[in-house]
Length: 355
Image (cartoon, rainbow, N blue to C red; front, side, top):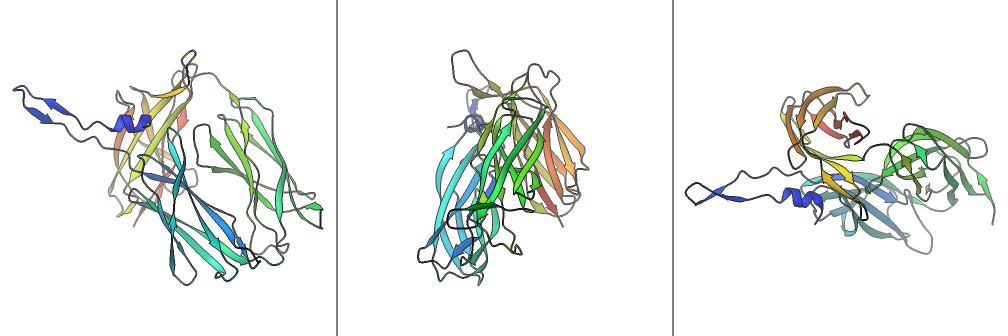
């Protein structure tokens, strides 16, 4: 059982003054969130003699909840997926399912629809004839410097290549490569930046180092690309970030996800701090009596503003209820007043829609 689950298991019965048990108020728990849905490969190349097995990866946060899913073909027909939990950390769980596409599978746009704990998410992907597709890869992906000081510039570089002959690889120029990052103790990858490859297929990008974690580069092939190459992702490379103060992290959920304009949404989360006792494994402890602020960006363009604040309780938890004026992105931020002791952090972004 993770720290989160220990914190949430607080449906207690307290004795009253007359000795009779008194029911406590139920503790409002953080709902399940689906952090990411990934398909590999995308597009799925079919048409060869062998079946192509596509992998569907789902990362969830919050209370443990079984993941279920369906594949939806271009004609609307459904095929069930069987997800199995592959990995768990203090904050997230990774689930994976596979499906074999035969040479006669329908080509076109498919959807994978997944659900966990009452939350659903979907992602589109392509199934295409694989004849003429050239294998591609990202070669020599690396980071510099390593380690790096927090706030300094971190350079990510590599080369996007495709097969040009039997044993030859050549660079793919003018293609967009996405740079993905997942912090230590987290499983979901998030896109941080994009870069376009040069004449030799090489790319270089500079980002600001904020925390230790794993970087990867991904080429997502465009349908209009004249050179028909497969998608490609590099292996993950770890970056160590030197920083003063203990690392902090916010778990955060917002619900309901959709509804009428000016309805009230509930924002629930917990603030944690990473503790490293001498001679013992590091752990994440709740961080009480700290101010967190709720931000709202109505357009998703970064024009955000504070909508409210709360002080974490003895268990590090906070709850805010705010009106949803329009569709937009919400986020909780902790701005440390003692950075030499503990660092600031931001929660994942949650999008709420209003009609």
